[in-house]
Image (cartoon, rainbow, N blue to C red):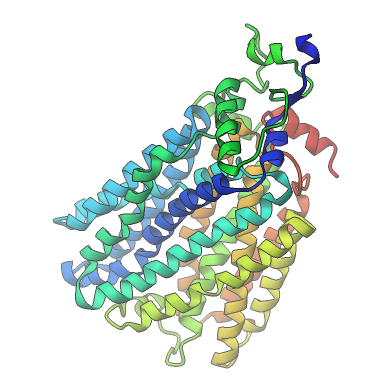
Length: 487
C-alpha cells in the first residue's frame, strides 16, 4: 500500500548525502556574495576623503555619502529577504546581483555629487544580501555540523574586508577613487555570471509544496556527492503520507508547511505574532547591540591605538586617505576577525549557540574593561584586537542562530530584518562614539560599549531555546513546539 511506503524528510536526505562537492560549490557561491557585500561596505572607509577633496564637499555631504549606503542596506535587508522567502532564493539572488553590480559600476562614472549619492544608495540596496546568502547556504547543510560550516562561510566576509583594504592600498595612490569603485564591483558581477549554476533551495521548495522539484535538487546533490538518497518518498513531515504530500487540500491551514507567506506586511505580522514575538524582539536587541559594539571597537581602534592622537577626531584620522597608513591599519585590524571566526568554529557545535554567544560577549566585556582608564598604546591595541576578535565571533554565531530559529517561510525575512536593525546600530554608533571620543570622553565611550554588551548578554540568556543539532523547521507550529519543549 502507498501509505506503507517508506518516507524520508529533507533533513534525512541531507544527513545521508553528507557534506560533499555540492555543498562546496554552494559554499563558494554564497561566500562570493559575502565578499561582494564586504568589499562594497569597506570601500566607504577610503573613497569619502578623496571625493571630498576633489569635489570640495562639506563634512555633512561626505557623511551623507556613507549614510545613504546604510539606508539602502536597511531597505535591501528586508526586501531581498521577503522576495527570497516568497518567490525563491534564486530570484532574490538575481535582483541582488543585478542591482549591486550595475549600481556599483555605474557609480564609478558619476558626473556629480547628487548622482553619486543616488547610485551609492542603490548599491546599498543591492548589498543587503548577507541574510539571503547565509539562509540559502544553511538550508543545504546537515544539522550535525551546520554551525561549524556557517562559521566557515563567515570567513568570506573577512576575506572581503582584507581584499578591499589591499585593493585600496594598490589603487588609490596611483589611480583614483573611480577605479576603486569599478574594481570593487567585480565580485557582484561574478555572482551574476555564476547564478545559472546555483540551484534553488530544496527546503524552500518543500515549504512551497513543490516536492517533485525538491526531489530533483536532492538527486542532483546525491549525484555530485557520489552518494544515494534514502529509499522511499520525500515528504515534508514523517507524519504525512506520500499522497497527502502531493495533494494540497482546498482549506489548507494558515501555518501548514505548504502555506506561502504573502509578500509585504504579513511577514512582519507573523514575526511579531504571539508565537515568535519574543524571539524576534530579542534578536533585534542582540543584532543592534552587536553592530553598535563592532563599529564602536573599530572607531576606538583608529583613535586609541595611535601614539600621536591627542583627543583628535577619529573622522580627521580617517580623512588622511593619501597616507597608506590608513589602508594598512584597516588591513591589520581586519585580521583580528580570523581568530574570532576560528574560535566560533571550534565551540559553536560543541557547546551550542547560546553558550558560545554568551562566552564571547563576556570576553569582549573583559577586554574593554581596562580601557575605562588610559592604557599604554601597546596594551590598548592588544585589548582592542581581542575585543574585535570576540565581538566578531559573537556576531557570527548570531548570524547562525537567527536563520535557525525561524521557519523556512520566514527565514530570510526574519534574519534580514534582524540584520537591518543591526545596521541601525551601526549607523548610530559613529555619531555617539565619535562625539564622545573626540570630546576626550574615553571612559564614557567605553562604559557605553560595556552597557550595550550587558544588554546583549541578557538578550542571549532570554532566548527561548537552543538550536544546536536541531533540524530546521518549515512551519511556525514546529517552531512553537521547540519553544514549548526546549532541551
